[in-house]
Figure 1 (cartoon, one colour):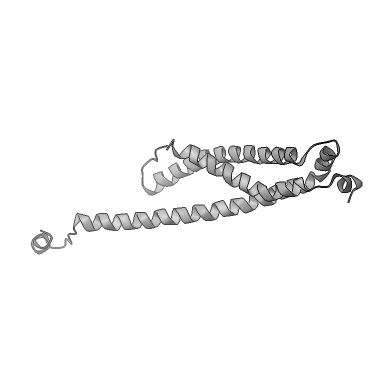
Figure 2: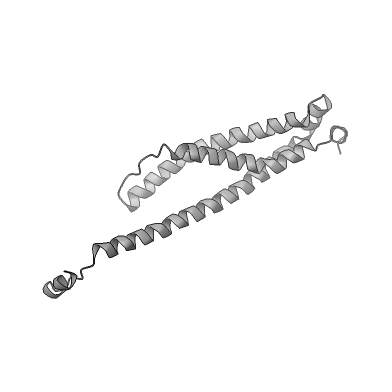
Length: 158
């Protein structure tokens, strides 16, 4: 039929629907891979930023940590405090990220495809779990530093 249409209708280049669909599937597959790659890079950068920020927080609170240890707090308590703080910050950041991400996706989809994006309720818990996991993972090294604080040295000002 493609040859018949091409012969009978001048100026028309008919293509099989299967070819068009395969071409679209290839483009969408490459786009999906690109999005996953960008997501992985952003998560790595987020991990580094959160770890750096938490290390700064630990260094700024060395005297507080030393004082707590001097009056009897154990390393596990200090670790739990910083990990809980990190997890809460990760959860709040994840919620803000989901909201901002949805509105940004709507904006892009409306401008590029002239279609709205449906809200995916299944992706929300996954995004929140990922945000908390990245934050907790990033907090491991700073929390280890916090647990190693020697109260006598810190309280003497060293």
